[in-house]
Length: 399
Image (cartoon, rainbow, N blue to C red):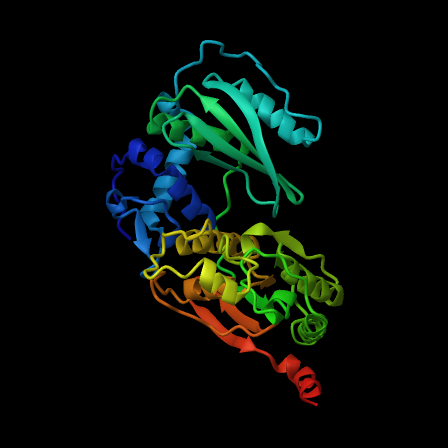
């Protein structure tokens, strides 16, 4: 061992602030898909601070970890030099009419934010029924507004914080200040594996009538309910260690998940982001009607929308972002997700590190099972489109 003398080392606050949300996500989640990064993000200034886990995924290097931890802890003393200027009405509580249905902790937090020197107003802008996720703060362009989210049980509140920030640096510094006040330093992500069981919904009415699915809400058929009951019994017998059950909010998936939940004794949690791809106006029409009224554009590009629907990129982002959040939340656990064929494709494409432009497709029969184990440096694919549980039903149908 050779003892090195103390060497003066400093980190660039501006680089850290400019890319704080990326540092934060990489530190919290461990790995981030490049496809989920905001458009036009230049990673070249972060050379040496991030490294590629694969062609499509990045993580913090050891220097990046050190930089984030050091500057996060030093921010209380030095980082506030970058905060927005003091508002003219500093210390005023302002208009605090946020309603009576807010959890007490959220009310207290909003009142605290309202009193910050650089904040001029705080306003609730919406709610959604969603998994109780981590508190988040995100800059909204050059307006000086920061969008916050707070979750309690299965409800999430969204609120806008108007600050006196005049540039991106000040907005990011304000975001760091908010995280320091309301979010404790997260623990190093665990290296435990996560086991995922993806289940496609059962047969539904629209499927029998050959209708375009998307966000059109169809109930299960009698056959679909039988399929759902069979897959539920199969999961109970073969996957007794399932710890959590999530489902798309569309009825065909919810009804399938309800059968599974009853067998497993687990209440399904409903997530909008697990819905099928939104096809827009063609949704719900028969395929023949859609061919006439809304023909498929001759050239499909992943970021193009058609007929008020989602682009391939938008769909992939929302599904994969939620997938990584669930992977982080359930380290060492087994998670069952009831969703749709294209959502299953998006998740499998991500864990196989395939580019979004690659036309990768997996057949997903009704209530088919797709099973894989996700480790830090390895993905073990065990089953794809598994339907052994339907054999008896198929034989009865054939008779």
